[in-house]
Length: 426
Image 1: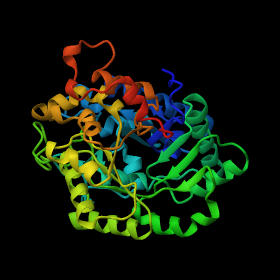
Image 2 (image 1 turned 90 degrees about the vertical axis):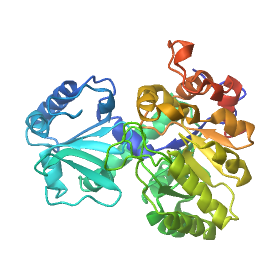
Image 3 (image 1 turned 180 degrees about the horizontal axis):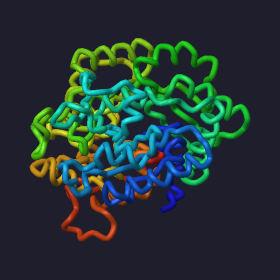
């Protein structure tokens, strides 16, 4: 689907540029129907590694285990022993599509120093068997703990991956403005080098995590360009719906006993501190908040601080309580949403929040209330194809589905309204 001529500057409002480049070379598990297909793909990739002598790190992403049949052991992912056999000693991991859960083999767990004695990190969980041994499934901060222990690409490979990502976003998908929502400290200088070499066509707006923000702010004078700029800071207030870690005001219908209403990744005070720090630097804050509890916590913090800097954003906003919808416009907070996620998540939403489906992505209400709404994809979690968000925003269901299958059809918007949410020139 091509953008209409009325769209002056096609914007990807929420992506992860380097991770997109890295994902292009990973095992794509999006079409797998179960653990056996996953093991077969890793077995084939492991055989190739042994043949060409490359570094033994096998990576996959986009798995959707929530849709797979349960294994004899009761889980959705394969057994750790089966994954170890398939990967033949090479360190291996596969991300769930939302990048908030992963499945690692024993070699990867060992690289990260994770065993039965490792405590769950704050804001994360290591799934364990009846004897307390890790199963290989890691959620949220536990997944990041392992990921950060994996070998990083060297500078040459990093540049190659970044070049692949920018080419795909600019030349395949025709974006002219891209927002990176977890920008690594090295990303600004690396993009500036590509820009100086005449390789960039889009402008890149970088939102580093709060722990990197002050250093990025201090150094950005050296790498800022017309096409590369520091945009603001980023925080994660909750997890995701599919992992049942999005922070909800009420429990999930099928929430796990460990966190029946999801996970709060930050305290109200910590959110407020982030708002104040960004405002002091003259920069806005972008807050990952998927559940209605997380959305309210961010709005509450912004209301308490009343920042003077414009452009504060809440990312995802997949469920919003009716009382909080008008607060976006009242507080001048942008709703940065990814309607495309509705398409693969319909079954998970019906299982997890069947009593709150009318609150899923209330885009119609946000626009009618006067809120600023912008669209993105969260690439590489899903493909950066605007047509998917147009389909979801306008029809509220997957293509080919009966109209009765739509989730919250009363929240549908027009095609012109949907394209306007992609237009940075509007």
